[in-house]
Image (tube, rainbow, N blue to C red):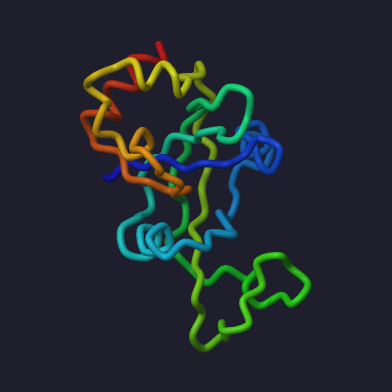
Amino acid sequence: MRYWLIKSEPDAYSIDDLARDKTTPWTGIRNYQARNFMRDQMKVGDQAFFYHSNCDEPAIVGITEVSATAYPDATQFDRKHKYFDEKATRETPRWLHVDFRFVKKTKPVTLAELRGHKSLAKMQLLARGNRLSITPVDPDAWKYILTLMK
């Protein structure tokens, strides 16, 4: 099993939305590295921290699980959608997504709190200039963050 961190702006899609929906396709990823993580490394059963970004207090707010492996993101083919990609075809899609299943909401672990723990210093979320919406999480960091949620 691998561990991940997925980001979403709570105004766009929040942990409460996922709790309501139970599962969701993680559409709209338009970064090749994040796409490759989904395509090449994410497997059903992998777990992810759900992180609210670009809000008053960015924080990990829940846990999700990969419930379907990568498949073509239909938004790339919809001319009216903001994620339309004119170079994508159904025969050779450029963009993929996985499905995530709600596991649970957690006590928020804020970005400031994460930065305050030296054992998390190598976490990709905390790297300067990191803008990826999907990042791997080291198993030791995963376990450590779980203790912060208690």
